[in-house]
Amino acid sequence: MSLPAKVIRDGLLEKRSSGLLQLWKKKRCVLTEDGLRLHKCRSAGSGSDAQTAAFGSKAKELRFERMATVDCVEYKRGLVYFTVVMAPGKEIDFRCPQEGTSWNAEIALALVRYKNLQAVQTGKNRHLSSSSSHIGDGEEL
Image 1: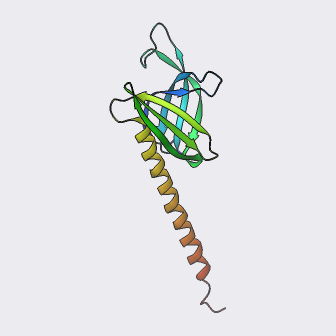
Image 2 (image 1 turned 90 degrees about the vertical axis):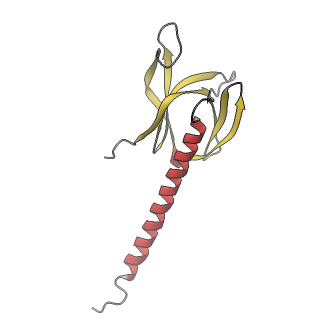
């Protein structure tokens, strides 16, 4: 059983739907060490900001192991538009307000951190497996 991943950032993003109209839909996003979880937002009353939005319990998970890169950053009318590219080539478009540290930068840094940790772990595993195969070479029976 693994421990829950550490939360790096939690907040609202807008995701472009993949349907015919490609509408922007608000999502509560939780960025962790393992990836990005997208929760549906349901409006709870008259406002539609972070304080009045209710979040669905079911989440879609974009895991870093299947993520290739964060691309196509564009700044327009106070918003940052960016694309998350998944390993099989699927592209998911997002936008967020341009204030503070942008989500695209946080996601890209977390992805690089994850890929680096995976590379270090792979190197350690190779080193351990090659050194364990040489342990018995010089011994006599």
